Amino acid sequence: MSAQAKTAAKSDRLIRGATGDWEVVIGMEVHAQVTSKSKLFSGASTEFGGAPNSHVSLVDAAMPGMLPVINEECVRQAIRTGLGLKAKINLRSVFDRKNYFYPDLPQGYQISQYKSPVVGEGIVSVDLEGGETIDVGIERLHLEQDAGKSLHDRHPNFSYVDLNRSGVALMEIVSKPDLRSSEQAMAFLTKLRSILRYLGTCDGNMDQGSLRADVNVSVRRPGEPLGTRCEIKNVNSIRFIGQAIEHEARRQIEIIEDGGTIEQETRLFDPTRGETRSMRSKEEAHDYRYFPDPDLLPLEVSPDTVAALERELPELPDEKRARFVASFGLSAYDAGLLVAERDTAAYFEAVAQGRDAKAAANWVINELTGRLNKEGQDINASPVSAAQLGAMLDLIADGTISGKIAKDLFEILWSEGGDPRAIVEARGMKQVTDVGAIAKVVDEIIAKNPDKVADARTNPKAIGWFVGQVMKASGGKASPQAVNDLLKSKLGL
Image (cartoon, rainbow, N blue to C red; front, side, top):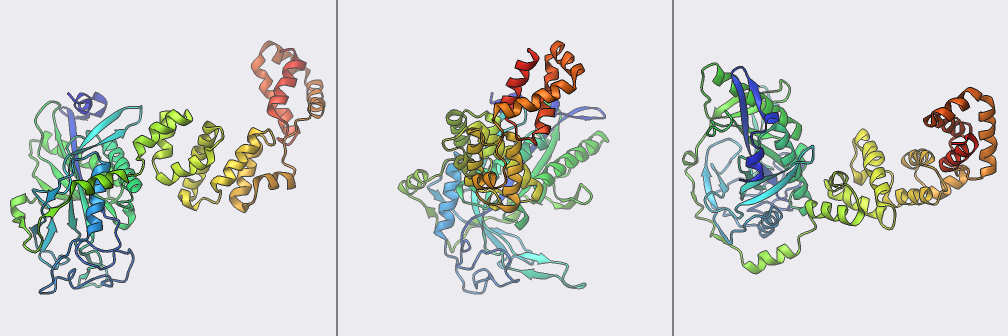
């Protein structure tokens, strides 16, 4: 039995209904826009944000006589993604026509893959809170072209169609129904997004539609067969995915417990109301009348091509985390935080090189990342460079500044920039290590507080009050180690 199966019905993941416990079963279909300058079957630009219908070729607009030509780079990106997901690469795959009619689908069909996708089964290891890891199976990854976009807010009586996205290459990554909670689903998509960004095959910008997910949700009594699923379409936020699953599971449980049955259907999530609503009855594969696209030959890839792409893969999050634990002595938790984003991991490595890695990790995770999150910025927009933070850590390590002074210095670097050592020199921020000068301050505080002295001699923890007073009197510049040593000596502790 797999680790997933063993943990599937954990009591803390069950949802309590009016008539007992229920288990939610979740599968996901993730649509990831391929990182490519041009579309899947045309040379039109994929750049985001162009004026409506400014990135449309005759192929994208389905003009008569126009034939699709496969974009080799999109195929390579799909294979690289499959390798990153530890999946089987199919050397022969077929493009099919998926027939449906909608105003923003000019051909009247979508070129996709059905029975013969470019990538087969794979696996994603997902870390959960509490140190648990689950393996989520990948059913397949296939290439397909995106549709355009209908705009309903430009005119009171008409809808408009923007075909800029028409023909953009998508990778549809289909998971197996291995997820058992909204938390697991959110963690899975977070990990998948991280892998795609490491590979450089999708930028993962959910706010721009580059990554979105259809979420299949069903409920059942623990141990019973799978229930009827409903699909929640085009959710473009990890937080919304969690909310949509929570609402949909509760909705289905209430219907069943009231004596009703779940109809297989497609639903939309309304983030304003925090609820799902019906969109249409769910189509089956035969409704789309799939058949091989007569304009495209089967796609054949050589083993040498796959091997070459595998050799070029970057170090992925799981491998990088293992290296950070082994080489830098970090905890698995801290290493996981640092490798979640490729740029953050690179920043940390630049800071930690030749220095105390644990101190570097603490500063990157707590001070830097905390401040960036507060300001709504990512690591690439950090006002404090890796070189500046590293130089600051050197000042702490050689005793030039204390940890408290370092926080003040960090604020200066954030708002003003500059060379850390030069700032410390110019602003007199060096910590005081002169034992004689510190002893004078210690003696004065001891002399003024005989009651505190008596307390400290019976309760050694009370020395903390003296440390605070000395640091305050020195403007935070006294060496904490020197202060502690002097106090222990003078108080006889």
